[in-house]
Image 1 (cartoon, rainbow, N blue to C red):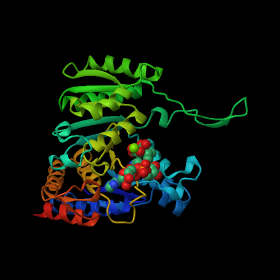
Image 2 (spheres, rainbow, N blue to C red):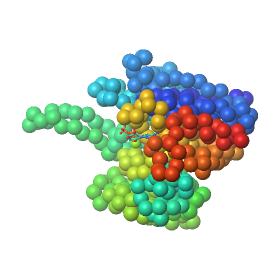
Image 3 (cartoon, rainbow, N blue to C red):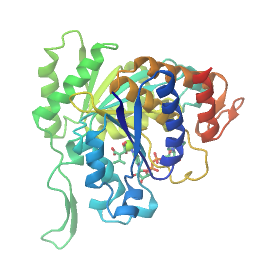
Image 4 (cartoon, rainbow, N blue to C red):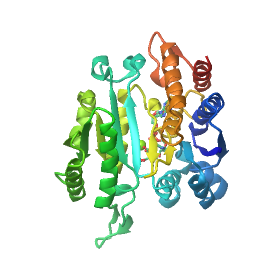
Length: 359
Ligand SMILES: NC(=O)c1ccc[n+]([C@@H]2O[C@H](COP(=O)([O-])OP(=O)(O)OC[C@H]3O[C@@H](n4cnc5c(N)ncnc54)[C@H](O)[C@@H]3O)[C@@H](O)[C@H]2O)c1
Ligand SMILES: CC(C)[C@H](C(=O)O)[C@@H](O)C(=O)O
Ligand SMILES: [Mg+2]
């Protein structure tokens, strides 16, 4: 029976990188006889322009009835002044909440060929393979109340609520412990338990859970130290688990260790393995329309989609191997370029991955 993939290219470089990812998806769909059918829709700024809202009920319904969602990126200066509740980013948050995608896997793996592209010394990042497990549907991103109000002194004051209940903490904790069991069996929980009560609870629940996973070594770190340790000695980490906002920040930081934010894919999963897949980067308005964006994070997100939602491990491995081959060939988009390599455009990178897949 065929399975449906909802493709949401989004804004800025979103359509440019998605065009390449779709070529790769079409290729493995044929060669591995996956019987996948793609449908396309709008999200973010492009949906605001077309329908006046970043995520229509019809698009959310389409996402809910699809087997997986592949998203490019949303946002851009054109929509920066629209009301907060209607910003392009709310489309993305609406999908995450509407699909109950609480578990966000952000692997930061250094392809050995890119050791020179990392902002850290090659010996600090050689062999880097860490996984950030980010809670994605709670915390300060979704807490109520929120807003901007006038206080008793007549000042405007902005407020958000950092809130987690133990059910939310437990389900992301379990996902992280299970992920650690399948890897190096080390889990570092990142919090701010020296200041924020919500993260004192976070830490307590992680400790409670650890009794169920005696084979995993649990440690704790404050988020400020974790940011520092990520750029000081990133290979000390195996799996990190953290809340929504800390995970957002730490994953951009981890991305740079791998050479570029244009390299990091992600999987956002519900409790049953249904998911949405997207690069962790944004719509990159500064380079949109120039045909130079790195499509590899999106292409690697296709591999994650095949692995986690479509039971197509062989196809996922083939894509990852093809990416390794183009890097071996010395092909680099501008963001990962270094002297001695060959600078290629977005579509040339797509051509090369496709050729490696079909070789
Ligand atoms: N998941 C998403 O859709 C997502 C994620 C982050 C930011 N955003 C949105 O994107 C817009 C721009 O945000 P930003 O500038 O802070 O972050 P960004 O990730 O879009 O860009 C940060 C820097 O990284 C570069 N970059 C990003 N992706 C790249 C790629 N594939 N290849 C080469 N270079 C790449 C950009 O050129 C830029 O210099 C904002 O509207 C923001 O809200 C969306
Ligand atoms: C665009 C924004 C809502 C999003 C987030 O903060 O989660 C992005 O930065 C990401 O990392 O996916
Ligand atoms: Mg982010």
